[in-house]
Amino acid sequence: MSPQLLYLENESWLRTVVRSRITESDGVEDVMQNIALALVRQRENLPEIRQIGAWLYQVAVRQVLMYRRTRGRRRNFEDRLAQGAAADTGPSEPLSPVDRVLAAEKQEQVQQAMQSLNELDRQILMLKYTEGWSYRQLSEHLGVKEDTVEYRLMKARKNLRRLLKNYM
Image (cartoon, rainbow, N blue to C red; front, side, top):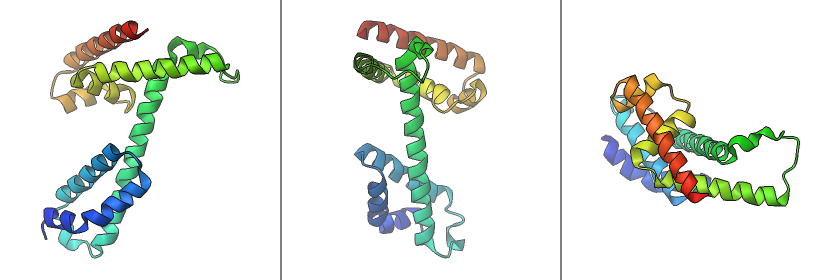
């Protein structure tokens, strides 16, 4: 059976499984695309899988977990950017209500600035700082030399700083 037919036959219940674990509709669509991609990647092995429903369920759960991890890393990255040098205060000190409001505003400003970046700048920053990719991994992913990655990262950070200045 082709991966496309297999996906279409099982899409409804897979979507329900994913929707029960992720509330954002964009996230559900991302995970569903990754499930379809997993089917295509495993097309040679599909005839050998005895319980295709169980296998698909495992793929769906794994993709949800990967999505959540990525979202968590992205949130941590945005939090670190928002806090910036304010991290000098020890974690044992509770934030005052004013500091909490300011931190939330900074986080929102960082998120807005990230959304304002062009796709390549946003992608390279996210891969570098949320996924922890090395220059080599970035160069392989983008199909450019490591020197180019270094330049693009420098440019992306400069653009982000410029945008953050405008928001503050």
